[in-house]
Image (tube, rainbow, N blue to C red):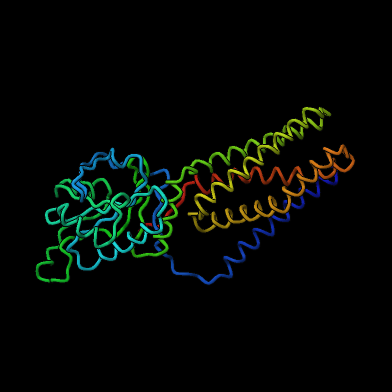
Length: 355
């Protein structure tokens, strides 16, 4: 094996080892924290709400078809609620501001429909400064409302028998959780309205799902995988002295990597960063791979590929060849780990923290 290949492999192994030590060490040295209830992302285990027919504060009838093409956040409140509902509605008002400029809708469903008529909900919504287009307040027959919350959202709801004796007690016991519903009326997550971290995660997840760029991570993984295949084919071709075909293959790899970089930047500009949802050993592995991938992509692939191309264009193959051999294992590692990072972040099953 050429010395340049060995150096490239040693660089990859060294960065991986240093990244793993840094991540594992930082987790080991960190003070243990009390686990926080940050929410429950259902991932691929979301479930459909089915059909429903409710009435908005404006008097408009709302069915599943009206929200089928939307990402929306649902809260459960009632206007006579003395304690929890004002807090929940304040959080929803904050989300209205946070998610301004997105297509995410907010939906507050009353758990006291006998009292909360559209007119009552209208006054309540006006007091909150709710945007009529982005924040809907829904009511409906009691039996249908209970069925929807209990059997479709799978959240608790019951009358409080002690409410009459205690004026401060809430007449209806209901969940304070906020529910994220994806397009197609699919429930994809639960978030505790009392936990600021959970609310931030909810807003970030809703923003990503509503963004037109939501499919880009899969595109990026495909581009990384394609680049890895092109690199291996190009390497085999040069070993067999098929120089012209090798050049075409490597130029294609550069083009694919460039497209990937553009898609990567667009996605994170639109959707922000995505936090790894797992914990324990899997998180150490993920962060180690991510750190080594980032270091080698930024400090290795970009300058080395540029230099390799420059020497090839100038036909300085005496300089091109050793740098290309050095670049190959680093570039290949970055491409393969790009696919691994996508799989771990978006596809690998995770144990989530229930709220």
